[in-house]
Length: 270
Image (tube, rainbow, N blue to C red; front, side):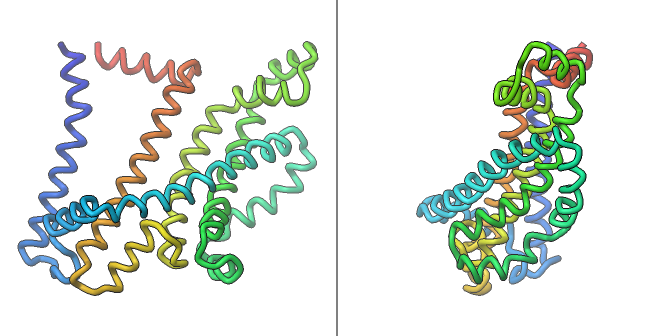
């Protein structure tokens, strides 16, 4: 019975918190504390969101944003795992690449947006490049740390058993570094979505960001629609982050970190 009560609270508290925030939004805007021309009421924004959903205009925008995000994430993960593993196993290569990684990691992706637009235009490749540029470096660092954190005994055993090349990479390196990889994916996912939407706002590529920009340029009458698409971006970000948490829980169920979480939950329930 106690377990059911705790489970119900875990689901109810976030819902209640969101409800309180929405009511506060309505109270502040409808009460005149903030100008409605700058910040529309919650009810107007929800009505605009309902119109965008009912007319179907929101779905192509979400699809365009997700396509850019997904392609960028796939490229980031594939290149990050390959390059990061290679650097982790070669001390000289890692020391040589470290300054380059730190320099590029410190460059805001938005700073190179004008150059990328000039070369690629307001296209999907422009979004994908910016997503990769923003997400690749933090993910690469996580891969390097993950591979280098492997137990030396595991590596010695693999060498003694003749496990080499691609087999060692798939059966030893990737599973051992998987906690770092999943964390890196979650970090890269958030940055990738942010840059994808920024590229759409500034660069004009199709997606949620461009719809935000078009609503803003339409004028005050379309501000509820603009805020509706901002809400869509936030909901999408929460959904993707939640998806990676569920993926981590499902894929990493065998790992010590997940076992510790389950044990802590059991102790808390008791």
